[in-house]
Image 1 (cartoon, rainbow, N blue to C red):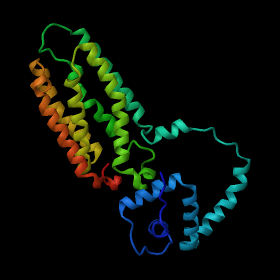
Image 2: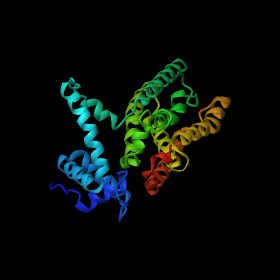
Image 3: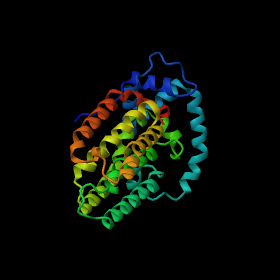
Image 4: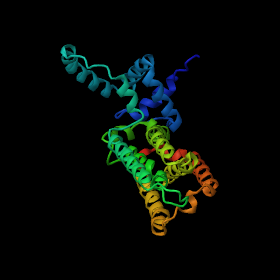
Length: 281
């Protein structure tokens, strides 16, 4: 495959649009063009050299400041010990944040406790309450909120400043949460006799609903609203009645499929709302 490099016009517009002290851009870059230019610059040393030359031409004050800073740093870097390679950590950082680790650990602990209580209360009654089934829909929601929370992400400012911090990054972090939660639920469902479809569809439906509402309310507020609604509408009546709610039985699966499809459709339709992630936290 041949690699298409940004044209001189795109690089000049990128410099004018994003470098302080540069001239006002004659043509503002669209969000998709800005994303494409930055994504290409990350992987192309030749275009980074071209960008450096464009900065020197379009913003000489910035180029002079950079040269002065580099002249001070270069002697210190020459004697500094190189840092060990962190390829795995660098790859994981594009999918997770440090704040996700304790949240995901808590989700796994809650899943294990629900499994133990289900096994302790195992019986022939088909209407008995399965805590694993009741909690499964909201277990990923906390992890998604932690992955996209301004207060919990120590690199929020850096993340929000990049055009690639929109929907693609949110979907990556959501996938990382599901990659941890779903295997735990699969093991718990197998151990308690709960079929995968009974917890998988509600789980995915709630995740997509959180993302869909997150474009309007912010992911953290959407996660709180979804979890609170589930606790009030389903969990509390289920515990009070002592019987599994109808929406969690096999008859409710078409409903969850419809909710999942609707949530995905809203996320796709509102994908442009994630180009400014600072507005959606």
